[in-house]
Structures are given as C-alpha cells and as structure tokens.
Amino acid sequence: MWLDQNTSYLKPVRYAIGYVLVPPQKIALAPQSVIYWLGDSASSREKLMKQNDQLRSRNFILENKVQRLAALEVENMELRKLLSASTKVQDDVLITSVTAVDPDPYTQQIIIDKGGSDGVFVGQPVLDAHGLLGQVIDVLPFSARVLMIADNNHAIPVQVNRNGVRAVAVGTGSLSQLDLIYVPNTADIKVGDTLISSGLGGRYPAGYPVAEVTTVENIPGESYATIHAKPTAHLDRSRHLLLVFTHDAGRVPPVELWQDKS
Image (cartoon, rainbow, N blue to C red; front, side):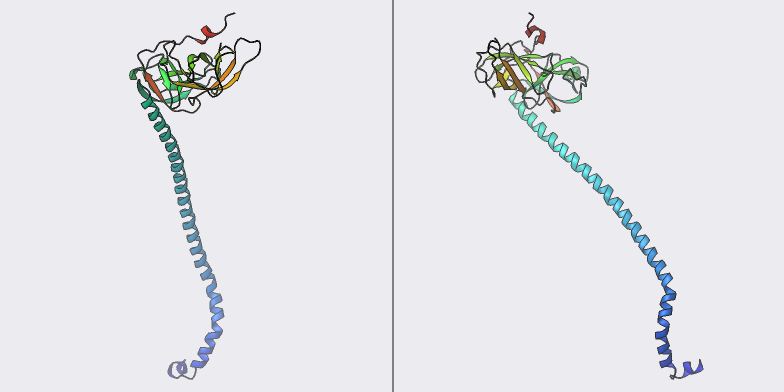
C-alpha cells in the first residue's frame, strides 16, 4: 500500500486490474439495477394506465357530447321546420312537445305537454311541420291527449287540392295509411294527389295538408273505388307540434257516422 500511495510503479498494474474487476462489479450491481428498472417500469406503467383511464373517460364524455350535439342538431332542424310551418298558418299557434305515446296497439294517441292552463281545448287541431296530425280529445291542467288522424276512430273531411273533389279520410290504425271511403269509381282522384282539409264539419280549418294519395283501385262492378293515402304529417317521429287556435273549431263526426249501416 505504501508503494501504491508513494510511487507510481504499481499504477499500470492497478489500471489493468480495473479491467478485470469490471465484469464482477457489473454482475454484483445487476440486481440493484434490475430493481431500479422494475421500479421505474412499474411507476411508468402505473402512470400510463392512469393516463389511459383518464383519456378513456374523456373520450367517453366527448362521444356522449357528440351524440347529444347530433340530437340537438336534429331537434333544431325540426324546430326550424315547425317555425316555418307556423308562419304559413293564419291562426294563432302554440308550440308543444310530445311527452308520451299510448302503448295500446289499437289506438294512435299521444300526450303533449300543454293543457288547460295554456288555453288548450277539446277539439283543437294539432299539426307538425308537414301537415295535420290530429286533434285534442282530453285536456288536463298541464297536459292533453291527442287523437292522431291514423287512429281507426278518426275521420276527417278532405278534398283533392288539384280539383276540389271531396272525400272522407278515415284512420286505419296504421301510421302510414288512411283510407278514403265512399268515393265513386268515376271520381277524378289520381296517385300523387295532395289531400287537404276541406273545413267541412267545422273541426279542422280548411287548407291544411292531410295526406298524399298512394293507391287508386277501381274494381269493376263496385260502386266505390279503393283509395289509400299516406299522411303528410310524420306521425311516428314528430316531437314538436303546433296547437292551432281557431274560432270556428267544431266537432268532426265520429267514424261510425261515415260507415255503411246496411
């Protein structure tokens, strides 16, 4: 040790021995390095998992917001159409929303969020952005029940917009079809004709779109033609509706009065 500290003769030897000791030192330190590496890896993995969870949650929230935005865009478009329709209606109107649909498969009725406290009355016409949807049949303070034109207990006097030919459109229970009853085979009604409310009976004001003729069948030997029409109102999807306040509202006769009693 004295020679190593006070002379330089052993420095080359010590330097050479350093090469020999490197592998054992690395081997000796390997477990500690592995432990440190595992600790860092575990910490990094935990951080990555935490960040991944946060990103997944944020992505879920953003997806939910996108879906809600899409729904709001559709609702905004519907309200714009409804607003456009309201400007074409000469009577006073009130916007309402559908809150429930009657689950009975044999009826076509809905519940709206306006009632007697808003001035809603029995027999009041109801429209959507595309045409006549139905009429109010029951009123509560803050809600009302609407009978849609597709209900098989509903009938409405109509006329062909093209030539004024009159008929009666009755509900079939299907949201996509109305039937025209007691129309003579000789009547000038064609596929594609638009049917509007005639105003007869006093319940619905004249001129509102009701349906479009889809089928005209003249059966030889029969007195009346078989005519089907599709409602112009979106009975199965419209959420926002118009309540029409008209002073000449009356009562549409029940469908039984239009049916053959023989």
